[in-house]
Image 1 (cartoon, rainbow, N blue to C red):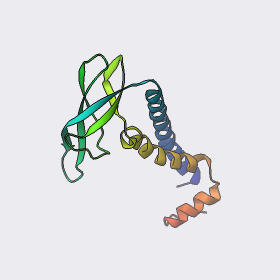
Image 2 (cartoon, rainbow, N blue to C red; image 1 turned 90 degrees about the horizontal axis):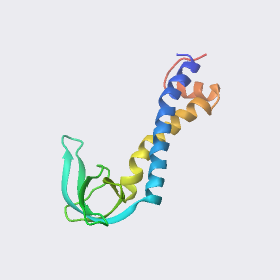
Image 3 (cartoon, rainbow, N blue to C red; image 1 turned 135 degrees about the vertical axis):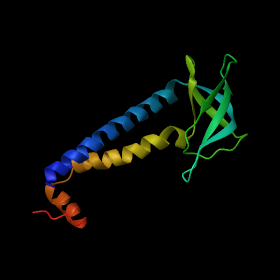
Length: 143
């Protein structure tokens, strides 16, 4: 496979991942600056079964107006029923609240940012000589 084709493939993979992660990161920064805060409590844990079990916390919280909402966190953190958490939410959309923790806010954006940054760098950063060295390391014959 010619080097320029590999670079195109890496760019095709890397740029969307990088753009998506930056979109999520900017959304989190805006959320942190504009959100209301509430105390919540984990009332249940749901899991996606199988060998790769991921626990998703169900959190109940009250808004400043006294209305109760339930939100589901992501499976990147381990919570137990009864744990108290801080919830960030927009007053006009409390049902879209998020648990205020590093893994809940930044875990997924970082997971997709890292390969996105790698593939984008591989597309635009290194020289062909560098890419040929990587290809040779994987046993690919290059000129």
